[in-house]
Length: 299
Image 1 (cartoon, rainbow, N blue to C red):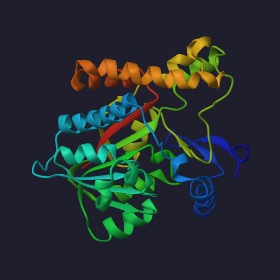
Image 2: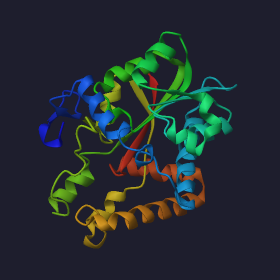
Image 3: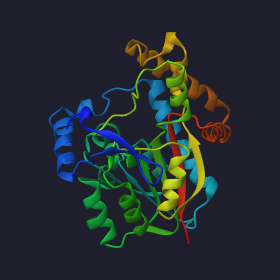
């Protein structure tokens, strides 16, 4: 499968999806070529700077702050599941906050390298199969389920959200992060000629494209209510200046990444509560490279 094999189409739910949609077999073969035939270190970073590590901790703290603010029905030792837990930074922070944590990922390489103490809390393999066979069929229930940058990769995100609903405790909170794509910022960049193509359209890695507006309508269609929404740093703002346009000049990417992390850490120095408000404001303006929504099931 190659990118030129796909077109984009607006779905009835307002989300942009690829067409034709690959089969599960085609997608499995693609990821086998992309991940398992490469060294795992190409998927996960082998080294983070001190600021990059601090930034990952900040991200975890932001999510946990937002969860605390919306409140959970279970105040004793709430259960916490992360689908696509990666290197385990959020799981570690959640465990330190008192959550009983479980994680799912296609590989344990990231956990083994950064948080090996969490290895017994991880299920490794196909997330759909694990979700069905271990959690749904065995009637596990979770107070929190987190999926960061997962929904855009799966063939049927609506089905995934329905499966997640089956494992949530009453009053449980689902946390979803997706790229803010086909956004008003990107549209303005195209109008101004600062970018020449839809660089974010990357099938078959990304099969669905959400933004701060369409994610709300999509999860509503799936039977969820949005109780909080916040964005992360709007790195695409750098594209409005020719000297920092990392799309036209990929050599600018490293400096843009460093500036994003430096500014995020600086802004968060006033406290996670103020930082959370800033991230909420970005979402309200339609900005931010990714958007995170906290959801509860509609009654």
